[in-house]
Length: 488
Ligand code: SAH
Image (cartoon, rainbow, N blue to C red):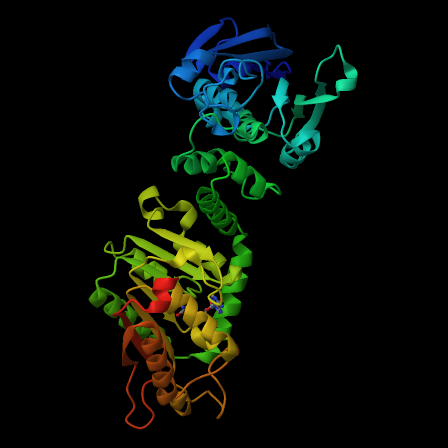
């Protein structure tokens, strides 16, 4: 199996620079042993005008089977002849992608000490793969490469050229041409998309494949129209890995949203909140009260449900006791701001592994929310229409069932104390209801009893002798496993 990479040159930029960019000298044929056989790099042509590098992989099918890596298509561990007699040696596939990354690893990262400027610049490229297994046919091949700036030729190969009426095989001859891409980008496209088109990964897909995919997909996968298909196939259709990858891609995309746009949103939100809640210190008091209650609960894995712009998530991240923090919100706009606030795109790996922002609605049960120590719903319930509240109740207390649930909501009795708030108005345009202390207590006690929690109600902010505190907090603690939960 093989592929060729060709570039053309001009006097001040000779085509043979390709040798520097690939870290492989054009005058030498080199051999590399990879985990599936021997890879060769050689240059069929190399002069100032035109230079072609060829990567050839000789697959050792027998050795692969011996090592248990040669399971047939679909991964069936059969002992059939298909393990030895298959298309692996001839067709470009995931094996070629692995060889590509092994042989051209620096080039894939865009590293080139000898020609640093050249590595960062687009160059004329022509890549040819004579036999590419393409599940999905030429249309999919175009759908995958064209959005990346390639001109694509994908000619189906006849099943047998001696018998044209047998029709086409699932292989195509692929030619990609572009002069707007860097070599590193081109290699990363191939590294991901060859196995996607092959759709038969030759090795077991493990969790670190997600990292590899995101690394290779940097700069092009987050906005790719076929992102769903690419992710799912690349990860051998493992649903949990695919979802993890797509969430991370979404965050990258959000983090890449134009700064000015986010600023605009920030200002709009600030204006909204200013009117509703003049003394910002209340937000701070609320956060401090929540943090104290979380500390007391001993939780380390925490959900912030309706996390909004991520202020609480940010505070939790600063405290190393929290090893897993998930912020969920229904609003992509809010999550955009949260991702920016947390600087998710610039976060170190360790820090990034502690936090996730996910989009979802609390009006539906969500398996992703199971198994956490604590959940916070800070100023969230009043954003749901009352008839939707039982759905949230079930999703949180019935299905997710964290050990501790903290719920805060405004105390409507206190509204008379807000100077700027006209009588009879709620504090925020999007509040669907605001409760008195008695109403909140009654709701909280009913929910607790129904789902096997105890509940403790506490004030947040100055506790006015007449009208109570501005914010009320309910601390729910799981006591029993209900029949309903057992059944679920
Ligand atoms: N918890 C934050 C934000 C509160 S504002 C804080 O204390 O500052 C309420 C948040 O709930 C908003 O971000 C809104 O998008 C979110 N929200 C409203 N309905 C939701 C639902 N059904 N599911 C998830 N989030 C929801």
